[in-house]
Image (cartoon, rainbow, N blue to C red; front, side, top):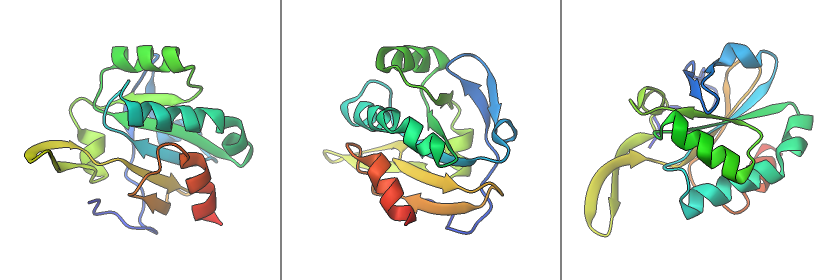
Length: 153
């Protein structure tokens, strides 16, 4: 669904995280970023994905990655989700869909014959120069960290 492709410059990210802090790429200078977009806090697939990334956070951090999650949920929802699941990384609230639209992951979805607007679960691996290194559009929520590592080999 995304209009971006590997090798493209990643759009800048500006948003508020679960701690009420403003987050942008500048905060992560010199680091690679795993920027993952997910539909909703506290849903089974989103919880599996977040917990899998949490469980492998230190391994990814040791390889020079920082993880940032983005969904349309509120700062308060992110705070509860992060606390409940002991997430060590930032979650950006994007209720107005500006970041989601910049990355082309907000759009039409279908479920049980119903058409609606929502988040297309997608992960972008972004290098230190802010170029998109890899895009995952078919995310394995239960083993996403391994999927990312295998995809980068």
